[in-house]
Amino acid sequence: MDDDLKDYLAAQSPEEKERLDFTLSALRSVPDQEIPQRISFVSDKVFEPKWWQRFPVWGMASAAMLSLSIMAHGYLNRPMVVHQAVAEAPAVVTQPVVATPTVDVSALEAQYQQKLDAALQKVAAEYDRKLEFERRAILISVQENFDLMRKQMSRMYMASASMESAQ
Amino acid sequence: MIFREVEDRDLIVKARKGNVEAYNVLISRWEKRVFNYLAKLVGGREDALDLTQEVFLKAWQALGKLEDAGRFSPWLFRIAHNEAYSLLRRLRPQEELTELPVGFESSSRLYPVETTLAVGRALERLTDEQREAVILKVYEGFKFDEMAEILQVPVSTIKSRLYTALDLLKDALAPVREK
Image (cartoon, rainbow over all chains, first blue to last red; front, side):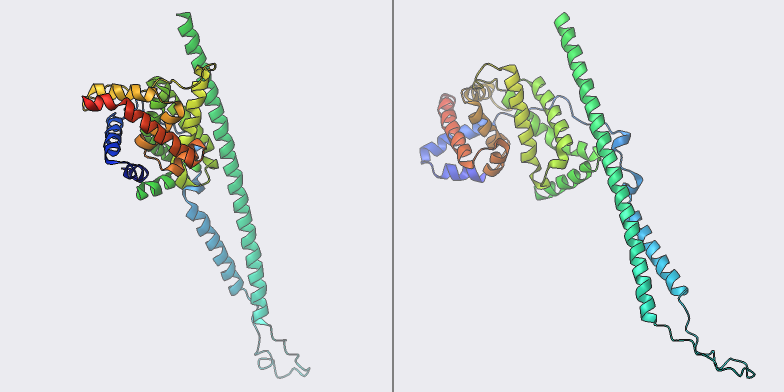
């Protein structure tokens, strides 16, 4: 039994409690009715989720692949520091060799990281925008379909009512 | 019950994304309860069925507005309550909604028909607010706070309606008890 009702019954005198118990039993003896017709909505194209909604992981995976490829590209094409330029220079060269300044690797990494972040943000923003657009389109379609369905139902009801009144 | 709520929550999330099949599963779980609530409140099975369909249609349209998926049942019954009263006002615009037909059909062979009829008659003597309090508590098993959410009245008012109704029913069903 429901706790709220138990509390209420507990506060009654034994006689009243017995009468209330009977009342509740009598009320509960009325069985539930079976619904005469099951209710269900018909699926429609507009209700079906888009392929990217069914596989949300794909979006994440492609973003991860893109970021990995950008990082790999940045790593493989990074500027190489040349230390052997002086040693490999031909002996006949009489002009002083100017050593190539050492490249700051950490600065370059930071630069690539910034570029990578910017690219990822752009991709994510584009993805979000597309998602939002699709969502709104679905909502609008659903609304329109239901409006149409309601109008059709109203027409059917009216037609049915007029037929009944005609009979 | 907890698992059921979790599953309902999951179905609601899917339905919100436009998954009709998920919503159909949700309907299949709640349609009988909503139908019986409406049948007891408005009377005829036909009206109750029409209203049940309307309730689920409106629920589908407003599913995005449901803030807490864990409060689905009070939210759904709030819609059902509104639909029932809207119908009753349409059917009886001039009358006070105090004597409503009560949808008890004595189709069951498990219980004495006399008891079923007596209960139907006893419920008819209640006001619509008292009757609804009894239906929501005794038949649908809602907690007081959920009933307050459905009926949009304070818990104290609901308790008052329910206890008064139970007192009246107790007296009305006394002759059946004595038999």
